[in-house]
Length: 359
Image (tube, rainbow, N blue to C red; front, side, top):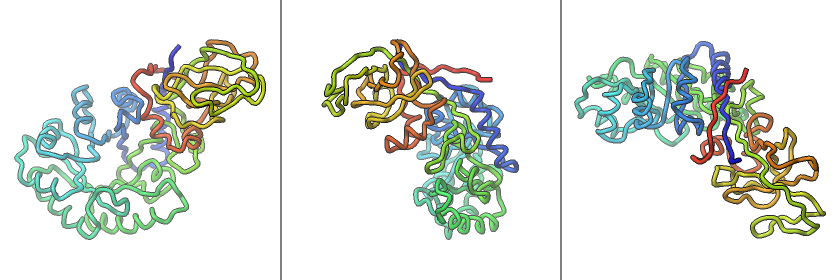
């Protein structure tokens, strides 16, 4: 009776096709970092085998994919942090993002079994990692001349405010990055999910879709359905108890919610121990038998409570959808003060993951 996460693998492939439709002249790094945004990295890699390449954040993720037999081009978005990681990247033929002079120095000094392919990360306005635009050309030339580096060194950058189509920051980033790319005359990558869907200038040689592959919107106040995406994860559980309480009865820890009248209250087998957000406020919807009912009281570790006044026919064992098919994850994220990325990544190890193919 515990919660489960049903994963529609056909939706993953549909969303990859949406990337191709939006950026038909681009090659695709399918981003499967952070355990594929909570969906399972190896599972997602198998389902997304038609992508041109994969991207993850860290070398250990890349090594895990290689050891599982995946031979696709594979980009490490954070690059390497020490000699051991660089040696592993060389051995497993992982492409590396270079964003710090310390990485460049290690590449100069450390002999490698096999040269590595590299991308130079440019800080065009995100102000997180990357070479400043006025330093990037010299850094790109320096990386390109190293015997430890194979082939053409690409240029990449990341959009800071791409989720807001009315914000001028993205245009300013294009204005800083594109002249540099022209001067280098090399392959470039800009577009994340927001760039792919909303910013034509970001649809360059390579794009890096992440959240849109999993069916959620990258935009403020958007939903995946707005852009023709299908939800991959449906987080669900069941009703395990129905209780009838008189008016004024406090529900749950600290009695933060009281029954406004005599009413039935349902108990659902899910809580923050499963990844349901503890700070979800009263009124947050769940789907019971396909119809909305509101959360009441505080979320506890293993259970939530819901108002059953509009479903007096509900019975123990009835299915509950917490987000996914029929209930956009973006709506739950908005009500709980977070983003869909965090909800996906927060589903815990005790939740059963079930693969399915919808047709």
